[in-house]
Image (cartoon, rainbow, N blue to C red; front, top):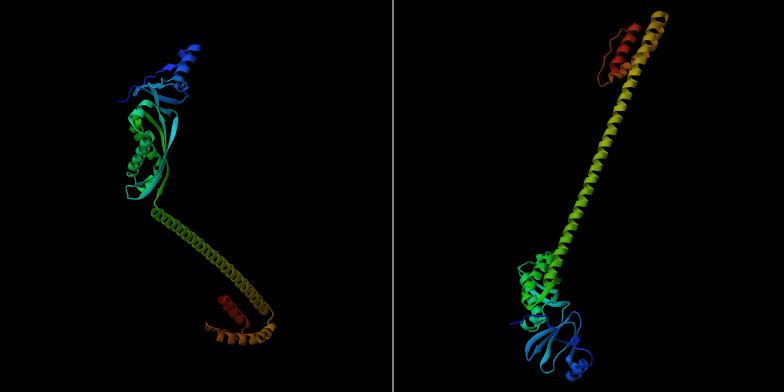
Length: 316
């Protein structure tokens, strides 16, 4: 049974004064004087039985009767956990190492409750790590590290409480899958990167093709619009030209008819002048696609001019 921890100062030199203290030290021997630093603890047994815990300062231990059996630090310490092979729930072998921060709160309980406290803590941490890793698959071991640290801290603190130990922090430092798993993961990541690159290239090419097609379509639209406007302008110009030409011809024919009617002597000259034009026009009309026929009185220049004017207006 672990003895109760009552702070006992023991045989402190502070209770002795002057020459009697020196005489007592000489009688007991210099090895009987123990100086305990701050943050340290010593356990003393008397006749093989736990007697007291030496407090910081100067203390005396009786030779033969008493013996210091343990000297430990009460400060926070670091326990380095070596790499440990674990198996995840999806049967993947991984290697895990960790670091544990802990503090000795009750020296006597730790000394008498467990043999080799540090080795016991290492074995306990390794067991808890294997248990926690066995609950997770490979992906979760990388994504839930903080949750695993908190779970290990809670379990280790409860497990070490009977030893008088306080676990203050647990950190998983590194999680390494086996070499084969690492190669498979690298191949998977390479395939994923190549897949993303192919997708990005195809999207870029598609966007480029869409932009090119959009540009060609816009160019065709603009070209067709320009051609349409050009044809429209050309048609308007031709129509305006035909209109002006027809008006000029009509005006000329009108003035010519008026001149012939006003001067009957010019009729004969006009008839001879128009005879040549009449023959040429007849030849052109004979070869015309529409096969036009003009019926006039060749003896009447006025009738001929009127017929020509009507024909020209019909052609325009």
